Image 1 (cartoon, helix red, strand yellow):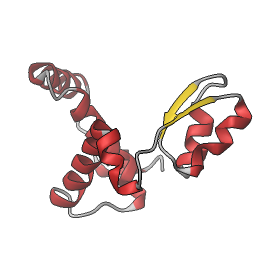
Image 2: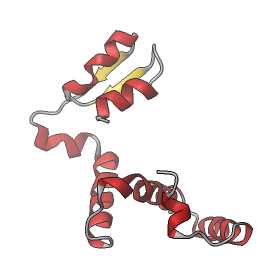
Image 3: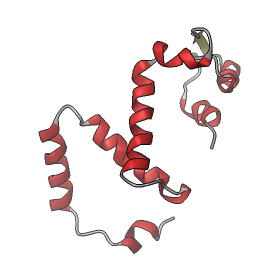
Image 4: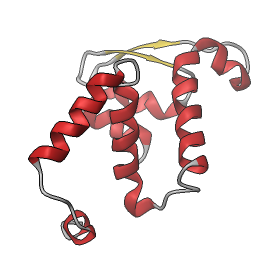
Length: 119
């Protein structure tokens, strides 16, 4: 699924969409969305306009290639889920540990077959 198709499914009509100059968001206009399109010169300057977004994606790419040495399409969503779990709890380390401890203590061990039988 492309980013444009994904955003078309997940963005409510009559939303205000803050975006860069990428044309993939144009179909959202058909849903009645307003656009706050902001570009700053060439695309190479986009990191100056949206630094937190670029930092997240940069950290994600570094994590995937540095820790896991690349990820295949089949398992990509699982790795993204783990990354978001860690990212959302990055400032509350004890909460992340307690969440993980709670999940591990309430659930039996998960085997490889249990993970991938449903796919």
